[in-house]
Amino acid sequence: AVESSRMLVSSRETVFFAAGTIFVLFLISFQLHSSASTQAQGMLGSQVARCTKSSMRAFQANAASWASPSRTTGRKWFATHRQSVVRAKKEDEPQGHQDGRPRREPTEKEKRIMEYQQNAPKLSFAEEAKSLVTFGNGYGVISTITKDDYPGGAVVMYAPDDDGLPAFSFSTMSGHTQDLMKNSKASLTVTTNDFKGAADARVNLVGDIEKITDEEELKKYREIFIKKHPNAFWVNFGDFLVYRMTSLKHIRFVGGFARAANIQPGEYLEASADPVMEFAEKIAGHMNDDHQDATKLIMQHQMGLECETAEIKNVDRLGMTVFVTVKQPDETVSSPFKLRVGFPEEAPDRVGVRNMLKRMTMEAASALKAEAEEGEEEEAAAAPSSSSSTSS
Image (cartoon, rainbow, N blue to C red; front, top):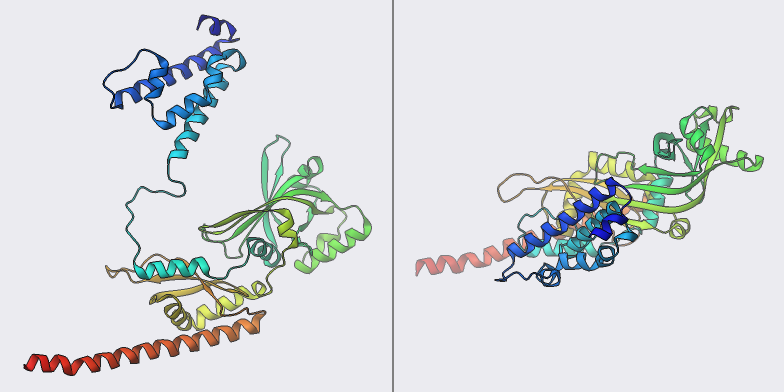
């Protein structure tokens, strides 16, 4: 210990090393206190042997740094030890969102719904992310590296090119333009047009955003920008520069609860935007305003759920995402939750989706009517036998 203290080069490092040592000794004492063993040995090896599995891993991970304090200062040693304890603890804990509440076993109906959700046809993450960028409203949040080396954000207009990469028209006076002139590393975050919360989709494109200097490319990307934003007359002003994402390094996509992925640049570039998602908002709005009863019939037929409300959130060529509420056993109405409903076959365009929804509505109405008639026949057949048994 004396030799180790001499090797520390400052009083601050000594404090951190001492704090780390006290923390370890406290941990050992706590573990020994709660242990079922009847005796505590004086040797450190015996103490470690009776620690929990998490603490044991933390001790083993840092054994080298304890033995050789000259190779790590007190501050670094404490930080490393703390990370190891947290990491070891996490390995022993259940992963995912845990709120500590007791969980009941799902009912048979709930199991059927869960199985349906797992197998329902969905777009790939790359397709959904590219569709979001391609058919978004053309606004997003750009993050650039400021002069202080911290990220800075700004709401900007963008226009996607044929590869789904964004192009921009920036004023030379803007802070993010000044940032990009010094450092091209940046990202763009795009959300759904009606983004309201964590259940809604968003995508973050990370890469290099650089100024276009070639005259032919400049003309091409100005046309792309004007096509997305017809009123952006300033794009041809002399003090407005055209930038575009020249290289894509990483894509982070979140489609809502329990639907998130890191997408490889190659997957994103090779994917195609879903043709139906261009009209998804109009389709969903029409169904929600005028035909919500039809959506409820489809949900009842497909999932066995009698919904209080059923609002279509999104539509693509493979199916639709619906937010529903249901009446609970205590007669209260549940919070909205999201369910995926697959189409029997692909609907390649807007007309195809309209025909598919008509077909699914008619099939649902017919099936539910047949079920009701069958139930009535069973009740009628059971009625005479019950009355005769009562008479006897």
